[in-house]
Amino acid sequence: MSLSRLCAILLAAFLMSACQINGVISSNEELADTTTTSMERPELQEFIITGQALPIESVVDVTATDKRKLVILFATWCSDSNRALKSLNQSELLNDNSVEIIAIAREETAETVIAWRDEHGIKTPLAADPDRSIYKMFASGGVPRFITVSTDNKVIKMNLAEGQNQLSLIEWE
Image 1 (cartoon, rainbow, N blue to C red):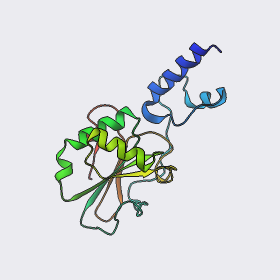
Image 2: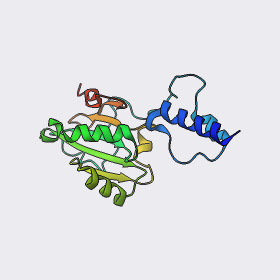
Image 3: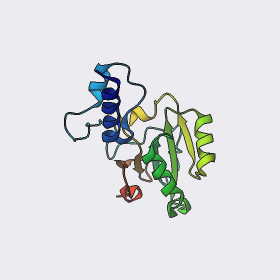
Image 4: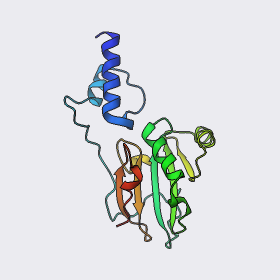
């Protein structure tokens, strides 16, 4: 396979899957696993369901039962993640005292996240998930993800928030 054909396949796979490709593809077999034969998106597994308790008490204060929570799983390199956090930065959600917000950067170091936050002027509290251990509790692929959580720390909804008008995907009921 020629280098230009391989680059075209990689680019097509990346564009079709938005911010879902992770890491470096090292063989043609791995490449086959990341592409589809049609214009359909690859199916992404989700591992948390509506009504399940939020499993990340190490990052979010689950004892605060007076607040709803918005957990955002993102990557600093992902254009959809950047757009989502920029929109959140300009939204009234940041001033809503009834909502606790935390954005968790998957496969990022604390230093990278801090530098990215400072460069982009992000006001949302951020956490780093360098080994993807938090992210793996929720899904197999795709960022950004918005996870809304009730005051009793049960997941209301998890949405893959790609594209435009991402904040409209936040659901509290």
